[in-house]
Image (cartoon, rainbow, N blue to C red; front, side, top):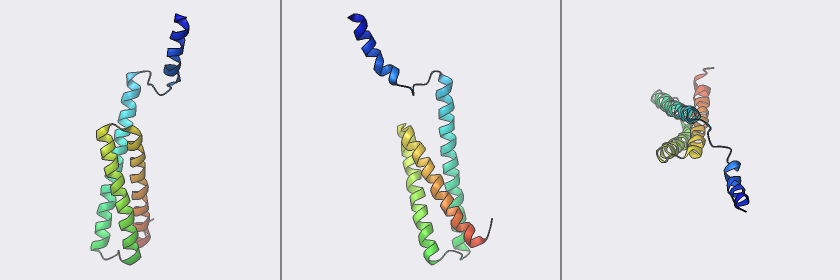
Length: 119
């Protein structure tokens, strides 16, 4: 009977396949997460600077301005969510938010390319 209880107690632990087997796995994952976060931060800073320059040059008006504002708002909200997830240690939200930042900044870049004719 003791052995049956011991086996039943091990089943939930055996089902956990996401437990790292070595400290190096945790470290590598953390480094990759931080690099993704840095890339998202840098991408946002870049497109923000590009948008401001395009506005200063008078290239952004009307519907384009509205689209850029929408994408910028989404990118900044995702960036804030990513920062919050980092502070709280929520890896899933962090990864999803970093991906959203990259998506929105990519959309901003596409719009800016369309008005500057840069390939």
